[in-house]
Amino acid sequence: MDYRETIEENEKKVLASYATFSTNSKGRLRQEEECSIRTCFQKDRDRILHSKAFRRLKHKTQVFISPEGDHYRTRLTHTLEVAQLSRTVARALNLNEDLTEAIALGHDLGHTPFGHAGEAVLDKLVPGGFHHNFQSLRVVDYLERPGGLNLTQEVRDGIENHTGDKAPFTLEGRIVKICDRIAYINHDIDDAIRGEIISQSDLPYDSLEILGFTSNSRINSMIFDLITTSKESKDIKMSDGIRETVNRLRKFLFRKVYIGSEAKEEESKAMFVIESVYDYFRKNHDKLPVDVQTLLDTIPLERVVCDYVAGMTDRYILDLYRDIFLPKPWSFRREE
Image (cartoon, rainbow, N blue to C red):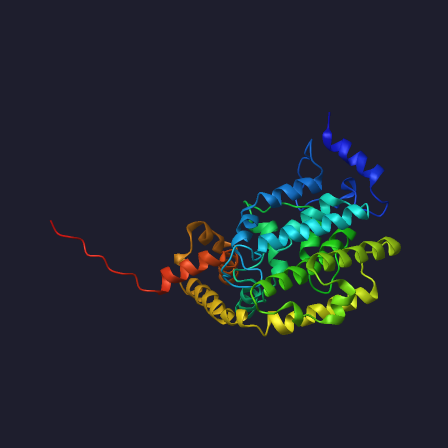
């Protein structure tokens, strides 16, 4: 029995007519044999989940650099929250959950150490600039495994366009784009209050009156509105009123947390570390790992160094910086 074909037939019975069906995928960069158990989107999800880049997310900054405490979000927990919210919306709208989950799990694979601070400094240093969504696509296309993960066009498009002005071409990808914002707005408020950067009373009262006074109620309001409005329009969007309220809350976070808070003062140090390590390997490419050096035959030096640095976790690049730039204690061997 071909289990995949059974799942594909069930999709046709259960999913909405405007959902993305596995059998209608635009295919992969390179043709390959179909799995007998999983659909193409399930296969993509599993490849992302088992990748090294996914595992590294647990040691990458979400918003606050090196917070003391086990309850602050990391890039990995953010990704899992986006996946959960996205699947909830996809299921309610009878869209393809597997495709939605694959996009959500892969959307931030290209994030640098130290979050957006790392992205900002690499964007300044690397010819052609640096954007984490394009780097996420580069990770799945080239950097994971020899030759990349060879994902479907639907998942690749959702990863590339989860941020920015261009919308993904699938409804499932558009779900992830909005749920990414819903997730980070709410969990960044939670982390900022936990870290005493802001207090509950600082939050804009007019927004709380509409969305709710707790994290759970705000998420529920946003997701319920997204599902209800999308179901009526057969597109993925919030109502005008809720979208405007969410945007006001987001602007508040930029003003009080992302830009103006004490916790962000360490970003300049983090940016200095990334710039120093990047510049060191650009000038001393013979110090790159051997497997990274082999890429120099086909890829420009700056891009190779960028890929290497962008893939590092927070703690790895700090250890590397100490190893490269800080003096080591000298130990004398005792003479017999």
